[in-house]
Length: 569
Image (cartoon, rainbow, N blue to C red; front, side):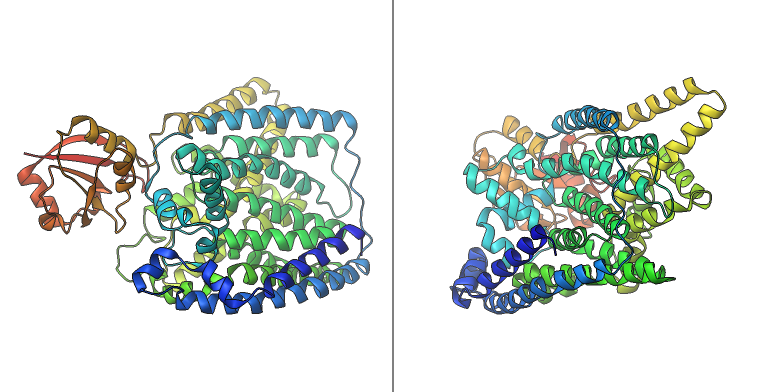
């Protein structure tokens, strides 16, 4: 075992051992959500007690795993096919790639920064109001609604605590940092995919081109841009998905125990960020087992399963404090009402379009390039394994949703985006080779420029995801002193956050306005979120006694993201 891996192994074991030694009461008190405890009339919630007990047990298991599994992995790697050293890319190629990355990251950052200050949308405010404002402990130990993307929410809780407050830019910094790192992670995935050869290593030109194209996809794909400026955990999911696949490719190619252990850590962090991430390592396991044809692939499968065991032990320790809360609300993950988003809905269409890097019609060129890149796997079989690993999570998510009767959002499939970028980049290389063969260099340049312009325009021209702040500002500017304001939307009255900042109390008119008639005093202004979700009674009342004063467009839920402002006649 190398010295660096030994230090990491013992460091992790000591850390988990120290956490297991903390007494249950102190942990339970730290995990307890203060607002929920106050509502229940207790100092410490029962689920927090249980979560603290599970946490200590899981930490003991994780400590043992970090003592034993890295050593077993090292022995298995030592008996595997001799490690192949990385090819020397050459000083000139390395310098060129660094300059390309610098330019691409600068462009990607510019496209992201211009959306950083737009209004929070519903889920961003829900995560802030339900979790982040109460500190790190309640974030780690509570899961009473699904808005908790734990690792990202921990980061935003730290930002809120350090800044002693919150605004749109501050809360989006963790997602922005992850979104910028995605560009470099995509480049690394491109390098590992280019180096995946059974007999020969790639030319410097191929490695450079694939890395540069993958980085460009990370910077320019509309989904990558939009999720980098959203105070949610999706940009972290994309980042960890790219790193996990790149590390596994490297571990299989070089039999590196350090890469395998790092792969386990990245998978654990991904699951800690969003529960759907578990589909990717499960997909990796399926691919590894399906490839068991000779001694080398059997050892690669065994290495993968050991690394995933390490990831599972680590992830269980991270998730154990909130598991009692999660199990308590497990029924909410099933599609019981009949109106939840499913695969056979607009969300299913967006999942398909997302395989082209966007959720709108500008996904079509990306879909075409991705199909070309996948179709040419027959001629270049070395593409098959990188693409299979990078895209392995999508079939499992679709299958799990269909068999489990759960609901599905397009953003749950974002762990496939590194595979999408890889397929698009391979397709672009194929088209470039064809253009050079037929002396169509100008056509190639025009096509590339048009694609860059198309993808950039989407992020530049789209309205805010859900302009709640704009609607509240409008009411503040036009309402007379003493006017009463209400909101109709989902169960949480998130516009109250912006109302509080402006000195207004915004009453809750219920889901879809079902409680509009019972709001007292009767509101003079009504802010409506998700207009298609307004109930028939509220819709009739609005048509009889209210005027539409303003409409602010948003793209969330595709054609249901506008925020409407009504004024009573």
